[in-house]
Length: 280
Image 1: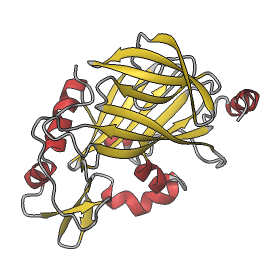
Image 2 (image 1 turned 135 degrees about the vertical axis):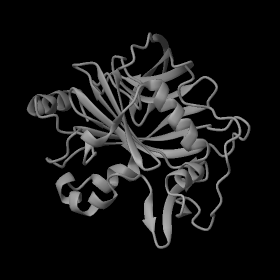
Image 3 (image 1 turned 30 degrees about the vertical axis):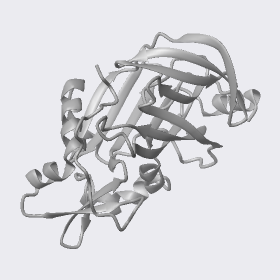
Image 4 (image 1 turned 90 degrees about the vertical axis):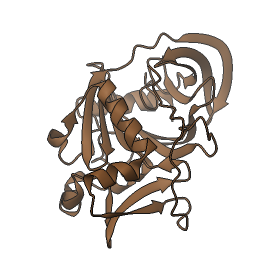
């Protein structure tokens, strides 16, 4: 897509915040330093508008893509729970790297506001904060990603040093997760220890006039407000021992593990040395 086409489309949707581009990243995270293989892996979708964005798993994105209103009746019974109901108990979604985490990160670039919804156990938590102000150092290194010429930048965030590759051909000062603030879209990023990685898979232009970057939450007003320290503690507990958390909430209900990568695998190892995304 040419730069002129993007700016033209930006002008047409100004004030409406319809989705312009959807960018899919492969997200990799070494959650357990004692057992780094396999890492947690999930495909994530960054939906971009002129001033706003939404970042969530491709699983959540695909399940909500048609229209939010059309899904309300169907999902109403499970709106307060992150666990899937199965015959005889609860279903816990996992992959080979651990429990599947359902999160949604929204950015408002005009207000410099960041909103994060996180499903843990049977509750949705809400964290409101500012978009991180990362002090990037842009280097002269260049490479091509997805047909776009990219330049490398280095920056520190939350206890990690990230190497990011951005392109000025896509005029969004944005990127996966909480990363952004460069003079173009971040197409790839990883911390220097390669414990956290965001790898470009595909970029598509949105053709659905109804698709926006609004939250997929059906009842955002019911989310429980927390601060960053509280959310990190809750995430730590759930990721380290999700079955224990669910058993504490539903003591008389059996938890059935459903592995999206290996359906025959019903096991889930506990994390020994948890390695959070944000170290400080």
